[in-house]
Amino acid sequence: MTQAKQILLVDDQADAIDALAMLLELDGYTVRTAYSGADALAAIETFIPDLALIDVSMPNMNGMQLARLLRHNAALANTRLIALTGFGGDAERKQAAEAGFDAHMTKPVSADQLTQLIEGTGD
Image (cartoon, rainbow, N blue to C red; front, side, top):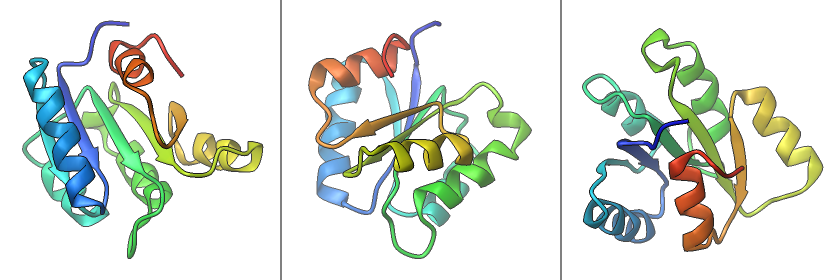
């Protein structure tokens, strides 16, 4: 798999996601941030990411609901969806896969794990 160039970060924790966005931008990626599912849906109207890192536990529209909606968008057929969550059990992994996520990562994600995800070499 080729390296992701455009990344969408979706998380209701603005400070954490903004810091991650800055680091990724320093590494040369084009990054958009969204602080809710609704913000993410608005972002993809003008930005088609290669990779989307999505927090599962968000208010109003959680990451599972968002993933299902994104998977119904033909423009995002090649976008890798990565679930970011504090829950790493088998049941959560199964739910994430059923929602359309390509991978499931338990927070906190290390820098090495994040690099592997972006390069398409990790799960």
